[in-house]
Image (cartoon, rainbow, N blue to C red; front, side, top):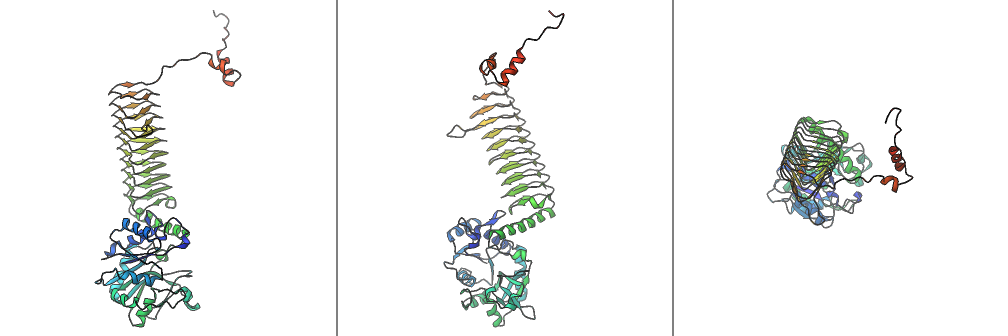
Length: 475
């Protein structure tokens, strides 16, 4: 297996990334290309790197550590790249598959079928092609009367009649290894680009009477990505394909146009995705869960029957039948037990919420453990940071935290305990106790009229404090 990933990709206009490291749906372009080859069980995978090769090689070691990078220090064409790659292909290889690293829509089933067709034909080469309404810029595939390929001519080298041909080469080939090793050494640079063209190998085979086959597939599968417009178009095609697979497997997607999923996302049958949902990384949605509208989940597990409404979650675990939202933020390390509830404008980070417990609204829970059946009142804050270090708070089972309570960590509230609304809890509250930590209220009579004279408040207070007239007969 040879993947060509050495190009500069100037049309991406990127100072941040090499072309093949751009991507979508949780994979780089190179990652998509390698994923398409997974079912081939190649004895060796060779990736030709060139432009910003250190970055590409580092990425390759992350996503495919068994792959062998081969450096094409100067890019002298696809034929030159394959010639360098063959030095790393085992001598006993019978077949070599070559594909570009910037064609993210290739499917594993297509490559498998191409290899099988090559074996049946006994051809020296079998290539993947597509027909384009506008083939400008692509190498044209010229066939003989028997349907076999006779030649591939690059657009810049093609005659007017040849440019009228709509069938184009995709850059995906299956070669007889021995024939390729022989022909690759005879490539010429006598062309418009002054490069060694891999498609010229086809002409060498034909001249020697060797058979060259071709299989036509839809253009949206062989499309390469050369700029960010094509990157977005490829993402749309890929996302539509993934959503169709999920829907045919039993997932309800209410609005596929506004729903986006990554390649690594798994969704069980009878889950429902409402409009404006995007699922990233290794997110898993269990059966019966309803996600959306307007949810963004990354590396998050959602349990059976859970319901998430306008939620952002990252590296969180949501139990069965949990309800979250609207407008909640689950940060990394959040674990919600079965039947828990997290409500409006709640943020949770690095904390566990026990079975059946509730954090209904307007609260921050950080670095905490909350037991079963407890209720966290509105506007409660788990004060976990002292300016230097984070500290943990423990809340037991069946606890009632009063509204507007500050729990200043490290602190513990025992099973069955209560805290009074408006308290600042700095000491442990024993099981079954009521924690009260607030100053006694005192009222300063006449303060507004004395200090805010002339204001609407002072006038209202004056009217309210006027003595009422006694009605006739009252004493």
